[in-house]
Length: 235
Image (cartoon, rainbow, N blue to C red):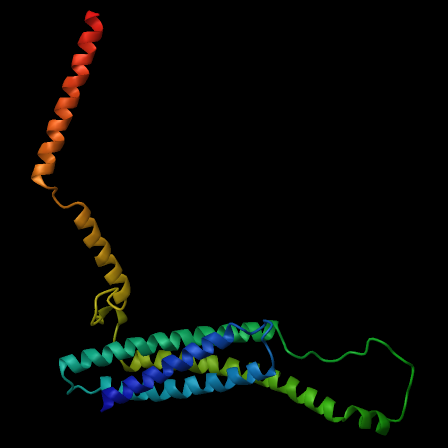
């Protein structure tokens, strides 16, 4: 049951990480918006929750010394896949931080034209505290706070990876895959096999009778050419 739970958590983490990667690619583009930034935050939090749960399950399983060899090898493969997900998640979070800093959605408003109109402090405050101004300030606060939160979460994901390395001694280069390289591409393998078959068919030994006929024809043709040359010399 523990292995199945780890697989289910890892599958959910893979999907959340892939979704986050897809969303990060649109930051700073024409599809960038406040809704996108909020969706990025939700997906990032979901991925981190799944990462914490998956890491706890794998750590508990791999620290069990009574586990069988085959079962431990399977958990080690899951751990390698989980470690790769963490690396990708951290890289995308750093990319999101860089893009979010370079392409802020909202910038502080600066008056470009001074009309010379002045008023009391109460009137100016009343005009400033309109619904639109409050919404704009809230959106600006969201951008600033989210980037600060993202910085802290990047450090947390890096610390999680480091803690996993310290608690579980599973060097990645010692883990063997269950399938050979390229085994997950059956269509390509099938196409290659078909190509080999067609080549073998083209290079198969030819029929013996056809080979003899071709040799006799070549000999007769050479004799005819030699005879023509002799006749031309004698004439």
